[in-house]
Length: 170
Image (cartoon, rainbow, N blue to C red; front, side, top):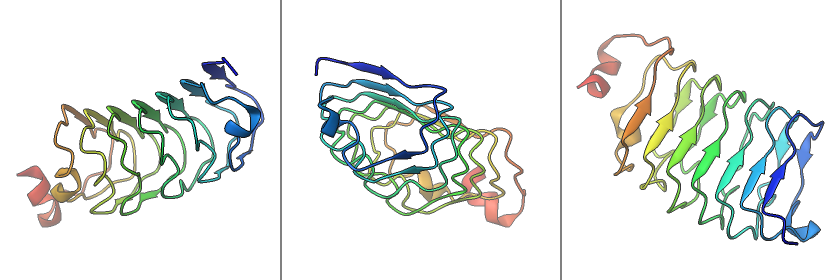
């Protein structure tokens, strides 16, 4: 029950079920590393009751959908890494209110569409990595709710430089 860091990288774990960690008595987890673990699906309550969780690395898996409110209650979460998952699109209110989230990485996730209000609850985000996705266009309104954004990485996307991208450019 005193475990604070759980490193399960490069294992064969395809699904995280409801209360996956809390049901095992791991309520003091601060960091969870599941990089390259063959994950395909995450129950929206998998991380529930992990009140002091500050970092999650789910990169290099096969996660195509992150259910809304997946990280609800993880109020102290500071770093969320989703690199290399085939997410393809981010929906409105994709993430719950995460008042301490500072870093969100979604590099190489095949993202082609980000809904207007995808980041509406992430107003304290400082670093957003969207490198090497499939975005051809993007509305500047997507980033308006992020009040403290200091670093935005967008290189490696196949931008179509037409009138639809003008507002973002300006």
